[in-house]
Amino acid sequence: EDKVVQSPLSLVVHEGDTVTLNCSYEVTNFRSLLWYKQEKKAPTFLFMLTSSGIEKKSGRLSSILDKKELFSILNITATQTGDSAVYLCAVKMAALYYYRLNYQLIWGAGTKLIIKP
Amino acid sequence: GAVVSQHPSRVICKSGTSVKIECRSLDFQATTMFWYRQFPKKSLMLMATSNEGSKATYEQGVEKDKFLINHASLTLSTLTVTSAHPEDSSFYICSARGPAAYEQYFGPGTRLTVT
Image 1 (cartoon, rainbow over the protein chains, first blue to last red):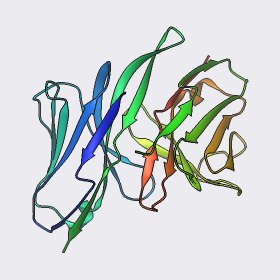
Image 2 (image 1 turned 90 degrees about the horizontal axis):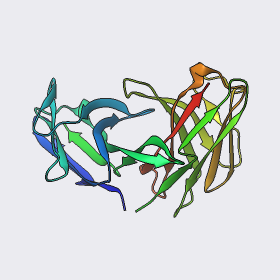
Image 3 (image 1 turned 90 degrees about the vertical axis):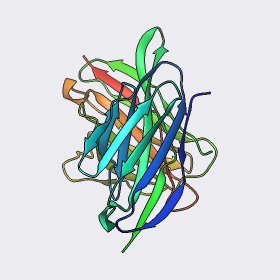
Image 4 (image 1 turned 180 degrees about the vertical axis):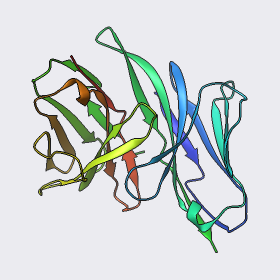
């Protein structure tokens, strides 16, 4: 069964702390791993990872993928209250659907991050 | 854990036809479901919020007569793309709010191709 597991489910830290969010997966025909930040309406895209060991950075956020151990981490340094959100991990996998190539997203349950001032 | 399914996972239809996409919560009752559209740069756009037994709430710029949403039961919401055009081709994702208000579970998506 294809699955994506995020940990921890929730996390409360103080402003300025560094946090590491985890996403492990077991899927067939892995294509890429996506990180999203969800605050209000729609999840905001953060990163897409396809290759192992290559860190992607955007400001205080960074992420890396390990395709051998089947996990990814999302790091946030010098956290701010505006980082409070649910962080979602999704794995894009390829699948055949009536003999046609198709893609599906398998989502984790999310990590709820709360940053206290 | 909670599971949300979508059907079909892929559909190809001709321009001018209508296509229905189903979103089901498999092991919980969802009073609220959401429909998103994913764009090529992976961003998700919220199209509408679907509440069981009442009319959907559409986001600004989303045509409610084109994207018909029906949330007839606590486990099923449907999105019907009417008079589909090639520009409607996209990846549509639904999510369902779980038993706890802060929980939200996403479906695997449906790829729509309009020829």
